[in-house]
Image (cartoon, rainbow, N blue to C red; front, side):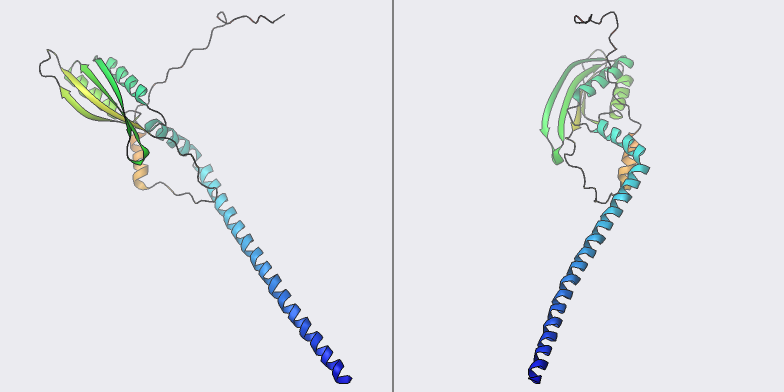
Length: 220
């Protein structure tokens, strides 16, 4: 009888130790998992705080750079602005622009879209050179593809082919936890180089005059 009591006690102790062991492993795993989640959350919070600090410090530069990039490579076909710029420069340089013909080329590499304009320019030779230089240093970004001089014209006349590009804006923004990468030296140099380019002059409609406003027929 005494041996049986000792055996029961030993079995109870073994059972208790087994339950304690499994309970310890279970709670240890839970604690380890919670610790990993807390560490991951703290890491994401740290990255987010660093990103917020960087954006706050560079907010003005980001807005200025964003405007430059948008003007340089817009989301829609910019040919109407290109032609407007050419007409404005030609008027200032006493040049005559005729036979304006535009063509959509289609998709190019890396989702770029291309349009071309062909036009005739008549006037002083130096004025035409100045026109090409102004177009090259203006927004939207353009490339002078070809210049053909008419040798039979009584005054200097050239046919100019100019290309311009555009691309859709990104549809997704980076995740908040994604690390911000700074611009490379070449990218910063490019932004600095084109920041002085001439911007297109957008037409603003004047506000309606009070005399031209229609009266409210429901007013008392």
